[in-house]
Image 1 (cartoon, rainbow, N blue to C red):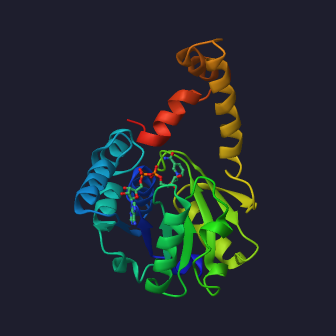
Image 2: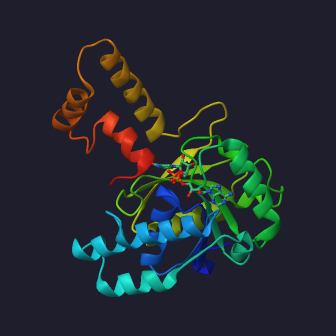
Length: 251
Ligand SMILES: NC(=O)c1ccc[n+]([C@@H]2O[C@H](COP(=O)([O-])OP(=O)(O)OC[C@H]3O[C@@H](n4cnc5c(N)ncnc54)[C@H](O)[C@@H]3O)[C@@H](O)[C@H]2O)c1
């Protein structure tokens, strides 16, 4: 699958990340189909994506996107609970909760539903991509790649593309092309068996552990630690605020 053949992106999971990724894709002209497990969650996802803090309406208000991009995005978005809605997508992005067995099962099921030449990607925060891809067919492996976005997806400009030995260069180039069209910058990473977290989350995880130790040793309050990192190093959020934002979304 080449970059210029990708017109429709399927997103599994319309939560904090899947919703933000769908919003970004739809804003830059892709048709984006989001699958979640209930109609209610689909409605919540649509509402957050349009009216949320980093949603499309605020994007227009803050001058980040034009009114015409807003209208295009809303028209490009589709939500549903039936995974077969994704059978014709050219690029699948998995963004279900960070449970390895869930990702493996869903991607294995999608392998027989989605067209055989479609690219599969996972937005896992750090599982080894070869493990996430375990249940897809050998024929799909060259089309499988890690696509790790950051939160909020429409705002944070980096995307780690995690390449397995089996991932083809054509797949890497196609997904890098999509990321660039979405005004995101690609960071290439090699899949690393036995490790969790690619680049940014490995480093962030160490920093968070140190912040927790500083708090537990009674050296400073959580608020003081957050302030030190923001005022001292220009972090947009401190380590404790970060965990809150990653889990619940930045309200
Ligand atoms: N939150 C972050 O800051 C962040 C950043 C980068 C990557 N990630 C990763 O992105 C993935 C999603 O994280 P999130 O924060 O968006 O989680 P979330 O809980 O906000 O969203 C997950 C969504 O997936 C849905 N879901 C569950 N089972 C499903 C299924 N079988 N089919 C379709 N949808 C299903 C849930 O109902 C939920 O709406 C995780 O792997 C996470 O580690 C998260």
